[in-house]
Every structure is written in C-alpha cells, then in structure tokens.
Image (cartoon, rainbow, N blue to C red; front, side):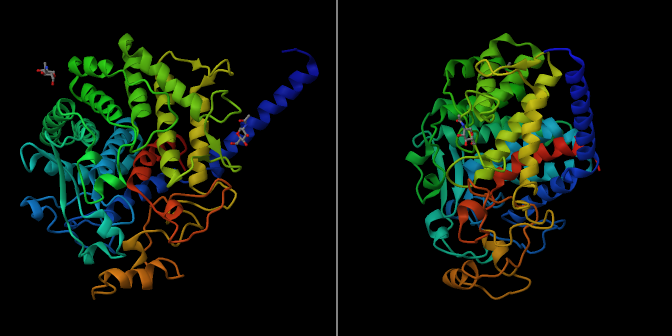
Length: 497
Ligand SMILES: *[C@@H]1O[C@H](CO)[C@@H](O)[C@H](O)[C@H]1NC(C)=O
Ligand SMILES: *[C@@H]1O[C@H](CO)[C@@H](O)[C@H](O)[C@H]1NC(C)=O
C-alpha cells in the first residue's frame, strides 16, 4: 500500500468513521440481546409436555400427554413437542438438549440471571431422555405419539386424543442415529450439571455411556425400524456416522476416556458439507473437537480443525470465500432451500461464534479459504452478529422473527397451542377437525403470544407472508432456539445496554 499523504488522510478519516460507526452501534443501535435471551428461553416452557411445575411462567399452557408411555407400561411423560404439533420426537429433542447444553457450557458465564432458566430448559429434556433410556432394559424409546394421526388434527396438546403409541429401538431394531444423539445430549448435559447438581450429572453420564455403547454395538438407522411416522418425519438422511462421531466427541469431553478418541478417529467420517442441523452433526462435531486441538494442543485432532474451517469457508458469503456454497438473501440472511431456514441460520451462527471463541483463546490468528484474504475471529463474529441482528429485526421488513421481541413480529405462527384459546380461556374440548376450521384457517392473530418462538423465517427475497398455514416459514422449532440461546448469550455479554 502507498504511503502518500492523501491516502493516509483518507485512511484516518475512514478509521474515524468506522470507530464512530461501531461505537454508535455499540451504545444504541444494537438489539437488546439480554431481553432476546430471556425470551428465547421462555419459549421452551411453551413447548413442554407432561405435568407443568408450579413455577411455569407460560400460563396459556396446561398439563398434557399425562399418560405417555402407558402403551408400554412405562412412564414417558415430559419432554418437549418439537414445534407446532403434539408429537415427541426424541431425535430432534436430543439435538435440542445437546445444543442448549453446549450453549451453557460456552456462554453460561454471560447469561447473568438466566443460567438457571437455561439449565431448567435442558433438564426438561434430559429428565425425559433419561426415562427413555432407562425405562426398559435393552430398549431406547425414541418417540411418543402417532405422528401421522397427530398431523391430521389441529388440537391443543391439552385436548389431544390421537393415539400415543410409543416407539423404541433395540439390538434387533437398531438406531445409532437417535442413540448417538441421545448419548451426546446426556453427556453434554452431564457437563452442564457437574457443579450445579453433582448427583444428577453422574446419572446423566452413566446413561450416556450405556446409550453410546448401544449406538456403537448395534449399528443401523432408526427410520428403517420405527413406524407411526416418527421415523418418517425425522429420518437421518445423513446416516448415523455423524451421530456416532458427535456422541463420541461429547463422551470424550465428559469422560476424558481416550477410547472415545480412538473410536471417533476410526470412523473416518470425512464428508465435506455446508450444513449443521438435527440431521447432520459433522460440522458441530468438528468444531467441538477443534476446541481440544486448538486449546489443549491435541495433534490427533488437527484434521477436525481443518474440516471445521472448510465448513466455515462454505458458509461465508462468496465475497469473502471462493469456496462459499451458501446463498444469502439480498438483506444478508443465510438461506437454504427447504423448511425452517432459521434453524440453519441459528446453528451456523453458533458454530461461528464458538469457533471464533476458540481461535481467540488459542494461537490460531487466521485461516484462509482457497487463497482468500485471511479470515479472523473478528470476521466470524461479525457474520454471526449480522445473522442474529437480522433475526431480531435488522432486515428489509423491519420484522423481528422472534415472537414477542421488538415492535413487529409474526402474529400467525404455525403452532397448535398458540393459535387456539388456552384451556383456561376456553375449557370445553375442541375437536380435531374443528381446530382446522376455526383456528388453523382463521385470519386473525394467534390468541396466545408464544414469546421467544423463532419462526422459520423469510423466503430467499426477504419476504415473509405471516401465514399460519405456511409451516415452512411460520413454524417455530426447539432446534432453532437451542443454538440461538448460545449466540444471544454471547452477544448479550459483549454489548450490554
Ligand atoms: C473407557 O471406555 C471404554 C469403552 O466404553 C471402557 O471399556 C473403559 O473401561 C473405559 N476406561 C476407563 C478408564 O474408564
Ligand atoms: C454470490 O452470492 C450472491 C448472493 O447469494 C449471488 O447473487 C451471486 O450470484 C454469487 N456470486 C457468485 C460468483 O457465485
């Protein structure tokens, strides 16, 4: 670069403007991340199944599915509904618990008073996952509720009268995908509760070890064995090697037992990819393992660091990375075709802030994507912040995609309990078909504001119809909020009001 006077004046001016701009943004222009964090956690209360506790703050929900498990003479009450329906799908529920746990492990120190709520959100899932793992020796329960029958009804969970069949995997009908994810969830949660509740943490870890051994010894895909639509709604398209890697990575963290390290290296799970989701955990496992490589100097894990960076090179915008494979809307939101785009935005943003954190704490100053300009931890944080800010309303429509946050947010989310009057407001039973006629297809806003629910989000052109029937854009899911909790805590700690 030339050092002539005019260009250095320009550089000083530019630097001055940037400082002004960023300090302006720091003090006034950024979203209220702490408020969004509190709301993102409240969302999980609205998704609760089973008997609600006395401190339940979301009052438009009541007890539901109180005899779940009775079809197999076991207690499988509790856990979460994944989105706007009334089925308990353990596969995405376990992923939710893993990501909530990871959020607390990395960012719990930035949650202030909210860490208690965050742990409660994990525990609501892990209490249920423990039942699923322990209720019947030799079986892992993987879901409750006939998903096809449930999707033919628009009913409040409290009124639900569709069959509550239970589904399980076993040695003769294996499911290493759901078992690997369940082991990951239990192991990650055991780290969360290590100081807060030592006895609970030990129970979680013991169950995690058993479930991981089962996943490893009896390999298969649960959707090949499990009926009732449960395996069809959430089949692991990516197979189960990614969950075996992820489960071993979490058990390695929780136990420090190097047999999990040997196992995970032996998997040779090397697919190149640009997505991290309830289906495919490879990118998450790579970032998680890179922590050990970058911070503890474990050289056997170096290949995972490289793969984590390749993933990031795929999700960066094409202006910063020649190997980008990720589209962005004109307003700057990452966009994948298909349903519930915000899940990918939230999980990718979590990996960006987390990898940035590991880089900043290690000597990894920068990496490059096929000879791109060096990518630093600051670049990763800036991209994650752009995504989170978009979710919270910094977008062409000025629309917050988190219900109850900001001045404008979705009014007609695709969610049975939110779209129908509460049992307190309307005690009489509302039947399956009446729900469709009177509530799903009603034009007005939902009667119950599902505070903190983050919907699927806008289309590839930043447009959002706010249409209850449009589940791809209007349904909130637990596995969007779970990684978002971590990002919000991270930014809440960096930009205090
Ligand atoms: C490590 O894990 C393996 C496999 O689960 C187990 O066989 C072994 O006993 C464990 N080692 C220790 C020291 O706990
Ligand atoms: C870069 O990304 C933008 C936005 O997603 C897209 O419109 C453009 O075609 C891409 N350019 C290249 C060279 O891929």
